[in-house]
Image 1 (tube, rainbow, N blue to C red):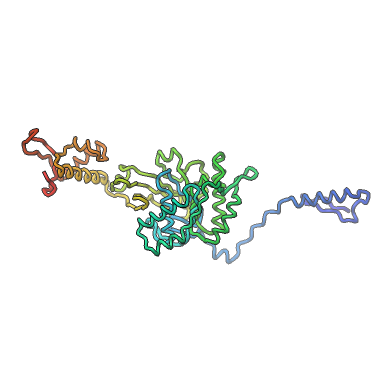
Image 2: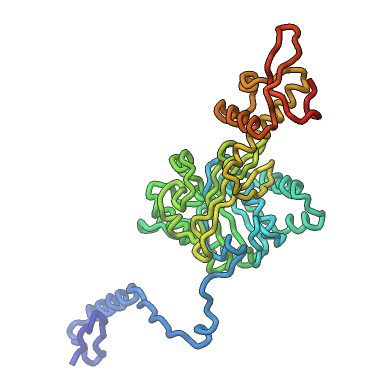
Length: 403
């Protein structure tokens, strides 16, 4: 008796069971069935049971590169254009290569750092890396170590994509597969990819495009066993509102949802910086807040306040003084008063208001009243002369009065 298809699996009848009158048509039918079987996908592999060795050795999370900061997983650094996010990447890279703490977080599994750039050319990044090293006052030996272990690959202008669209699905591209053996050989601690938008399939299907990049990064993570961090821009509204939550990035939510580490960098104006830190921003200094709204492998972390001076980033603590801004403004006004008197002028509230002090009128008046109340300035009168007797603001320390 000939056999029939059972549960979708075809079984050919034995040769002696075939109808000899069918001739070559039987052979053709058999070939068709063989072709159908060959075209069927292989069955999904059955999940194996957990071995005793796996049970005992399995970790609860990936290895940290920098504690409470970067782990061997996928992450994203989000910031508006022009805030210095690429400089911050270079700054972090130097610390990871040298094993130095990053803003109080210990580097526990440092090593080489790879930077894939599709925006800044290699020469400019090398120049900025040199500038950071010089500002950090690295030794010749440390600079040599940085040169050998911060590896920059410039793919700008090459349309080097980590994802592609296949059968309407965004998936890792052949470039991802080409990249993996190189990274496996380097064994980096971190791979920075800057900017994310240049490595994807576009933003017409934004969440699909972002999820495709996440999948490509996971392929790299799994094979090279490193952290993979995309450098991403904030959305317009997030930049205007200085949003620091995990969804501050432009585009969809897939980046934030798929990433296990989300860092958000936002600029602060002079007043915001002063209020937060009690410190004053001077010319060519930038105040920044770096938030870490999502680190899946660490406890919740507080935002960090950074002052950018050139290519250097200096951490500042949060001021516990409720009057920190007023105190700092008062010091600035006192210096203005001293300067005016030293130049032979008699400062008043109105004359100080006319100066380019960087303070709003309300802040200036509050500072003057604070100085009066604390006894550091008084309302004095000059000797009668041209223009008659005039009142002016005078420091109470006799050594500070040049009038």
